[in-house]
Image (cartoon, rainbow, N blue to C red):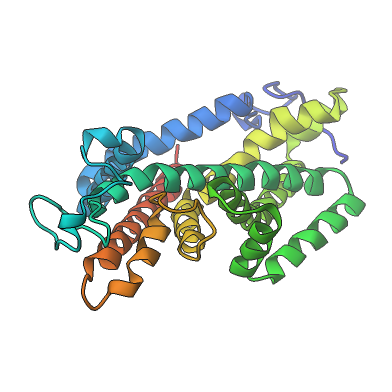
Length: 311
């Protein structure tokens, strides 16, 4: 990178101070500032939108299920009463009971922890690996860029479900394995967004000025380039949350998650598909929970995407 410029914040001859390019103050500060902006924007705009209010309430409820399920149900998710098999939804059993007499609502509540934990792990894997690859592709020259982006294109050419199934078959079954498989399928998108932002930011005047002043490349990369490029990446992570929940539930439905009697959401839907004619609630109600959570996450993520970037 070549160019000339004054040190960040300095005033050149004949140039007013207001024309000096703003310089990010560090990765943690920029991330915190963007998250605070998203939070403030959400607080400002949620009361004006009933759909956003409902989305926040749904996500808070599901978060409560995951953190403290015993606050929402006193029934066991793994043991049931044989005399209460196939009870329809009622005041005693909000979601009915299954073929073993287990309370379906209790299983959905306790399954939130497994499903959301897998979602968080998947997004973390995609975010960390994708950002590192994007930084390398955008900063280390054309050979690194060519190799990394060809790998990204190969990953994008494979259907996500097929790639997830291949990874799970290679590393084994379980919640963490499903999370890693889903996370790997999202790495390519994060890498492309990060690379595009790095290529845009690295030619900024304050970045070139910092290089001319003798700063080491890794210091420029992590102190100036990465903080300025992190905004669209965080927006992508928010948008990806609902899709990851759906992908994790899908692999669990196919039997790649925790073995029975673990109450993962996808497994609950799969367990009830053989009883649709006689016990519709076994599949329908857990499916509605997954659908509502995905829609709420997508609704709220779009608010954060459109409002969080504004000052």
